[in-house]
Image (cartoon, rainbow, N blue to C red):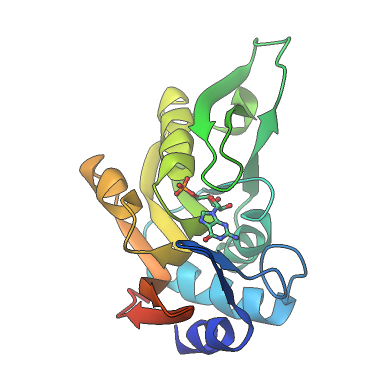
Length: 193
Ligand code: 5GP
């Protein structure tokens, strides 16, 4: 998606070897107009797939996911990151290793929000090694729901996430695909959308 790629080139900052900071429009301050445009493009790719729920993970997946949900006119559910879960009844959980925080946390969704009649689109801000998306897939499968695909805002294609998710037979569509960082600059490869 050209608008997003331009914005990454304008406002993204490469940190170290493999982190892109996009806190001025996506992960901290949020540009709702860009989110709305992105939401529509992701939604259009899945509009005829019978999606009943959009699922993401807090916190920075929520902004893009809500606009995908709005465009598809379905609810958005975000998985919560709990440090301590004392009540397990009625909660679907998965262990997720966070690429940016370098800790493993238990993420959860209340089972009442997903069931075997649901056909789910997963949305997230970044795809790196695929652990967040894999955790969401596990939770959705526990609920007996089916998964249409994973829609990603920014995929870092030099990491293993896409392969991991496609190996689980879940298709991945990304609005921007980063091939590499070169001298602190972002180099794109052709995106899916
Ligand atoms: P994965 O689980 O695919 O390894 O990493 C995806 C998660 O880590 C995303 O939900 C996102 O929050 C975070 N993440 C991964 N790479 C980056 C990055 O380069 N920049 C930012 N801001 N977040 C990232």
